[in-house]
Image (cartoon, rainbow, N blue to C red; front, side, top):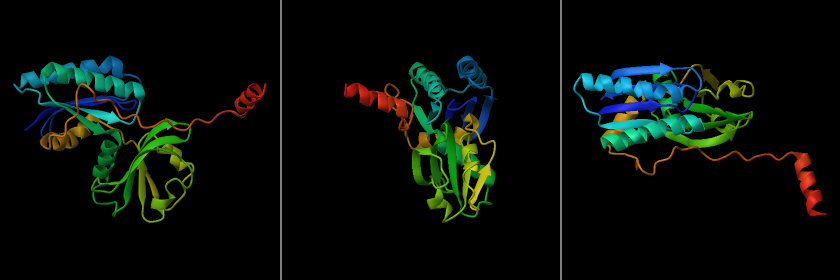
Length: 239
């Protein structure tokens, strides 16, 4: 089976896991904010020591590809690309929202009754990065930058139950009161849960271009301009 180093740094959580097929040989996680720069290198070293200790070689590196924290993603991808260049092995990108969805689906088991899953990552204010998945992980709506209102997800909530989770889902609790909405707490994107996604992509040879791969930051939200700034600009143009 493929021996893959999994790296996840897309949120405030920093984690790394070494997998052999679906077996986890090593895993460590820190929930301390802004710890990626100081901890990821240490985690990688420990994972490689475990690998060498059992006489295995690294076949690929998988990294969370976003969306998520700009700084966190840059750190994770930079380390992953460095390892791939150094070992001469392929790079696998795992979408953060897909990883979150798989985590929630596995936690639910068969109890969701055909409902949908909406992983959410905090952006700012009432803004999130979100996608919608079925329980088989097929995509209903791809990743998008959403401004959360009572109507943002009404199209799906009118038809079936939708489970919201991730560090952006708390914003929905205050504005979505549909009986079809439910919320799952403490769902984090973790390296240990990347193993099945990474293995599938490895077996299908779905690799990234190590030289040119960049995290998926998603589009910028449309900025709102203060009224006084608009007025001042109009006065300036009109002399």
